[in-house]
Image (cartoon, rainbow, N blue to C red):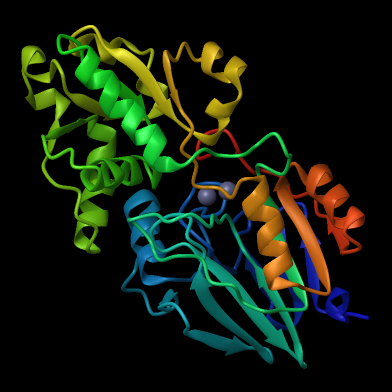
Length: 337
Ligand SMILES: [Zn+2]
Ligand SMILES: [Zn+2]
């Protein structure tokens, strides 16, 4: 029997760790927050003190003006951590975006891991997910249904490059979330041998620079706003998804609209966004990655949150694994998937 329920409390607005008087990924401002990664549904502004990896703190500084120099905010590299109220906290790679971490808590002989968001397939822009053995595994379930099986990333990148080559008079405009997805698509393109300049929307510039500062080589990037329209024919342009069908895209030569997201697996979603070239590239675990991870971590209990809880819950039941669904609010699954 796990004792966890006596020291850790899932609330709609986040996970509260009682003996430490600290919240994990709270969706409202609190006195003390441990943050798994920089996406807006996990990292909020206005906390008294923030505990996170150095990369996540840097991202929060960029997005919300969190003061990295302030002594109450503390950065911990992977493997490292702190103790508070008898609880030992440590940060371990989640493979989701730069700096993303699972948070391990150890208290009176019991171990709980909160994954935040994660994925298992290789990503050139961040450290790979680590299996951290624990009693309770709090897992996301964005794609917690068997229909969600992401294709190999290399196939989607090849599709993108093929589309650019097929239309030398047009540009291909890829909608990609500003933190993580955009940089990953760029790095995957570089890995596939695309060494031409890649053109970006101004909203991506600062985050791309932050990645470069943290050692992720993105090659030559040029701002669309500083480029002649004709130069972008036969080239790849990246913008946040909101810019896809915006007036902004008129700066580009007859763009082919693409979007990189796990949701592109659902044809209707691609149609809704008027995406001609859906690219199924996700920073979240797909169904097989989720179920494999639960098997490998092999916890006494899984707590499922953040998405299709019921699908994964059912799988756990079928495999005689103890599980429960947590219903946290304020999780925006749409933008970053
Ligand atoms: Zn995320
Ligand atoms: Zn998330």
